Image (cartoon, rainbow, N blue to C red):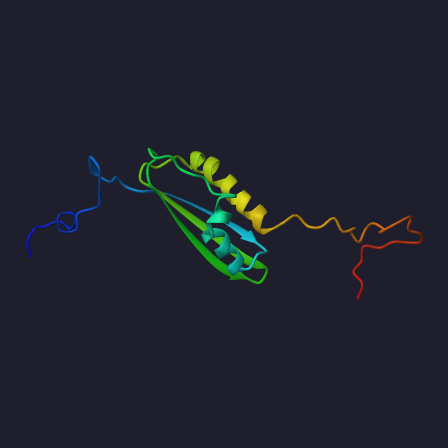
Length: 136
């Protein structure tokens, strides 16, 4: 076997002006009550992604997104991995991507209805003793 290095045998991708540098990765996760099919639609339907996903400019470095969905008993866990060629700091990534995930969750998990809670009467005054114990 000769002294040929892996880099010589498998040259990395090249960007205009030179090789692409190492990737910087950031990972985030959220849980939603939405079913995986609804999450998938929100991630792949252009009419929906416009409601929460950022647009990049022509001079922005490439950013690669990997979405992973896992069905859970209460809905779906969504994991997002961001790989950037010109990496940002963790704080910059949080400033950029946490609002995106918050907007995605808001779209998938609409605010609960304004139904009266069990602790309050639906109308008028409630008379008699109250208890927070569950009814069995």
